[in-house]
Length: 393
Image (cartoon, rainbow, N blue to C red):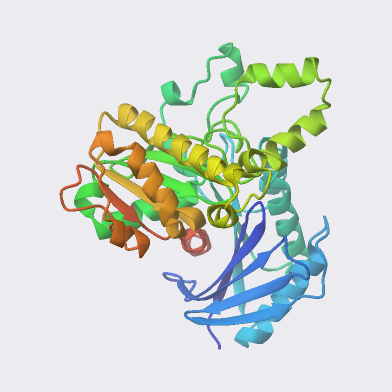
């Protein structure tokens, strides 16, 4: 394989997803991908090439310094795809603050700016920084490009971004940023291809994975996002609380004397579906469980999603489409049905069979709102943005 190759890294809270793209000097073409589940032992690199799957056991353990793990992963990719002609590495970076409104070639200053935002996304930002640093050590001459989840939401107005706190804090960066922007950017394009008349209107996209959020789109442009200042905001997630009464935080700090580090751990790692159920953070496990607490957790999750959709119908002054995406959104028919049942008043009516089979359009012909299930592809967005930076020199 003598093509110019581009590799993308998409670090999540529990996984690292990789994409491998050819023809990186024009429009990147996916030739394969990979995924490492950081919760598994031993760690495995799952390589995909279309329908073909290959599993490679990794000898490296998960450590704070990702160098050994990434070095072994890249060696496995080079061997598997019989090529080492990599011309660039693209990275998903969750937080770009107000500095980055689009992709950026990573130099010392850009890396420092990314690292300075660690406290705003402690689950994701440090891992992205460690990935970038590892690639620098392994491939010092390969350009690296950052794609920012927050950039897509820079179209939101200050009215949307302001939080009801003393006004001077907004100037210090205490504002709503929005996340999962790479996914929403992809879905906006995918919906425009699938149903251009709907995409041109008022659409809510529900990105439901271990991290979960919703976004209100108007003509494919972000108008509001449920995650705000941090990735804790919005609906409950796998282990994250979502929006919470700030009085609870004061109570835990003042009355329970909870240390700040312990409170952070609770909000990021011991809440959400895991906290609600006391069983698992995995929606698949909870859906299959016969425990009442599991059913209750999923019911609370579905209601929170529906409430956010309803709020965005008010923001957009109407609703033409609803899109489910990401791992849970794409593969959990029961959850989609529960969400849509709460929204029947809005004219949403889904076809049970289409929903069960995860078809692209799951609403009935008479539904007042078109409902879709669209797979997201953040890696393709990262690759396209990296290729654009490389092409510009």
